[in-house]
Figure 1: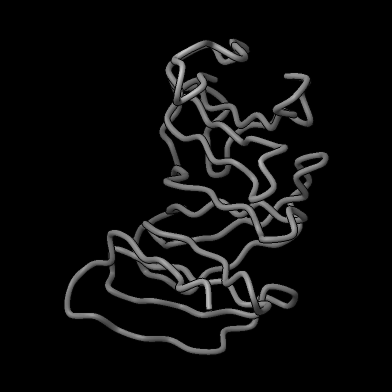
Figure 2: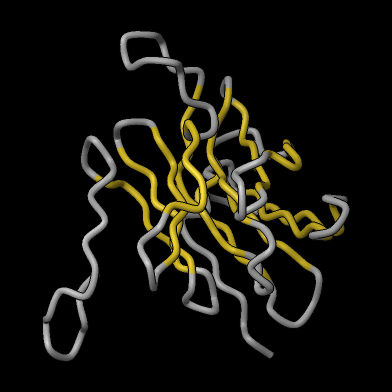
Length: 166
């Protein structure tokens, strides 16, 4: 981690065995989840650099020699920091996996997109979670239950989405 103003290295986290594909901070800035091409997902404490959990990435095969059933394309922390969600594709269907960020336990798996889940966002002011997919669908779900509240269909794949803070 590097200070953006001075360029000084603040913390080096070198526990992955290959290049890092994804990094996401919790909204309070205290935790980071990172995924590497080594197939591992690691969560760690920003201040101390200590591990919170290490687990195989969602949808990953046991080794890179095996045929992968899928992969995770992105991550998001809930506003309260009590959930991490990974979105991707598993066996040719879009899937979301919700985890406990303290220990990496899988809490819920959701399907509904027919292609790669390409974008994720939590609404900070409500209990809503939004996912977008390359199939052009946008799903709004209740964060606590996973129930789908709204589904929208675009004419083309969703590459990115964002939620207005208010």
